[in-house]
Length: 112
Image 1 (cartoon, rainbow, N blue to C red):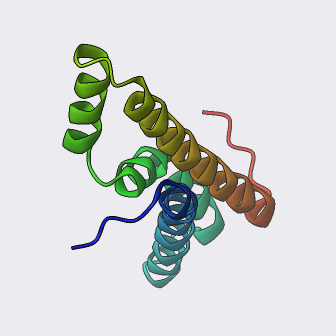
Image 2 (cartoon, rainbow, N blue to C red):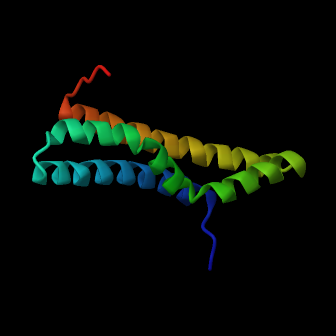
């Protein structure tokens, strides 16, 4: 299996997190509609709870990330450590963008 370069992985990480958050929230809203619950409120709540899972899905699991951080810290591989940090930052950006889009779509303000 051929490993992809850093910049394609960086862009993929962003859009995977964005897709997981948008897709999971909107499909959850359809399920809420079918069960008689308020769909927009459910979509908003799901976007909040799916954010961490979108990040984990985008970076490809936690064990590879922990291994890369260990390699960067213990073997003085600061380049790998910096790349992994940027991939996580990209996934965080994708999840945040998805949450903002859901917030714009639903116009929900829930004080809880």
